[in-house]
Image: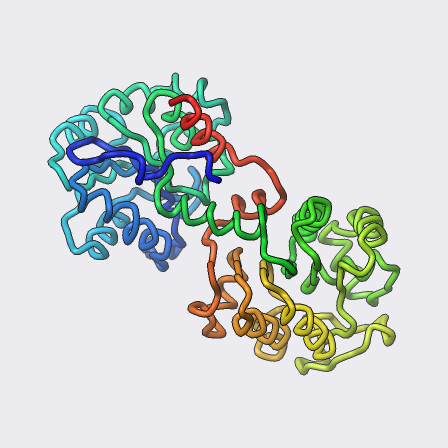
Length: 408
């Protein structure tokens, strides 16, 4: 049962609503143009459209990039893209809480949408703090008196205790937007009471994150099986005592992930049979794919994918599942010779009748590349927030909404 309020719990007509979204988008370094509007579209087609249709006065707060980085740009483009998606005018002001911004908010009419300037132009925005501390910042003190309601729709930024994420929750009635609500409901399906058997497929290059996720979901009896691939699978193999060969061992050493092997070995012994590692791998031999059984290691060639035997074993586990979580590819899927493992495992998940959840930038890119987007039950656009949630960590943005609900 959710512990936060949603848009279903409030009336918004004629009210001024501050909405924190995550418009942070990939930017072309040369042209400074947005090259993917997926995040803008997600908020536009749900929360922002609903608020506008219900005749709220909508004030959008969002960030883009980090100060000093090449993608730190104003939000004028974002407002233009939002208008194109919604097929209605969207106002933009190059100010955050100065007179221009405050006057623009006061002049809003029912159903109008106003995008304020990048919240990270405010130096204190990214300083961590408690909701009470963040409520005392100039951003909150200037904007909150003009608003009737705060909506946090930025799940992908909810792992940050930044001012615009948690500061308004102590001074305004606060609810989750539709993107936030959908993310938490979908994650709840696989973390709180998943249909069993529940299988986690962990790949990619972030072995330290995967170790924490693996430990959390096994210790809390969330997952029945964990399947490993990518660099994660390699580290788990090393933890089992496998020598992968000079180029692969050096790569793991350079990535400083060998230090994880002790914790992984302990975990695999504790949950014997529940953690599956590759039984064969695909190596790069002069640009061509060659598959080797694990017993034939070490190798002088770079390991870039799981092998066909591993795919068959993993497929058998996935077919029995009723819940599947996928985070990270099985290999270097961008290379046509080494995308087979990722493609076939994702296809098994897509073909499964299980509830499937996938997330992470490379995972989403692979799903899109192989044309499987519509066949995955839920795809999370969050990055760090999703990872921390899967680790069982409390997200400040979610906790602040729950506290706000409890206080009402």
